[in-house]
Length: 189
View 1 (cartoon, rainbow, N blue to C red):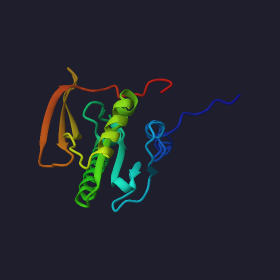
View 2 (cartoon, one colour):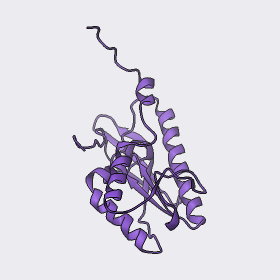
View 3 (cartoon, rainbow, N blue to C red):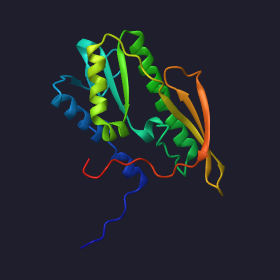
């Protein structure tokens, strides 16, 4: 039997899905089982959120921890740092633009981290239900990592630059041990 060569980085990246991801499918199944009916990737005035309740003007985005700068699980890549920092910045800027534009048009926007879908699915479904039953959405602060720099490789420390999604002027810097193990969904999850 011929041995398979490992996939190149480009081939690996090409396999990453943009729609119908594991977290999306898991949340959609739970929402459906809870009796909540929605549209998938339906057009809104600003983009196509992962889950849309058009009549209630609620858009839900499920954000991946790596691609959207999760403050708990973002891991700084070890190569091509300028490229990846630019990609992260562009994603955070797009998330901000979509969120603020939709909200200015009277839509409510929920952003859910992929780890929340796996770790607290019932809680996420309950939050969606509460938003649907009320006329408002009072979002909690939504911090995003926008850059990470190594402080001291010998003691493995880093500095993480963060911005709040809805208020880009709100910034903070955290220093601590380097995060090296990205979040992974549980097996069978």
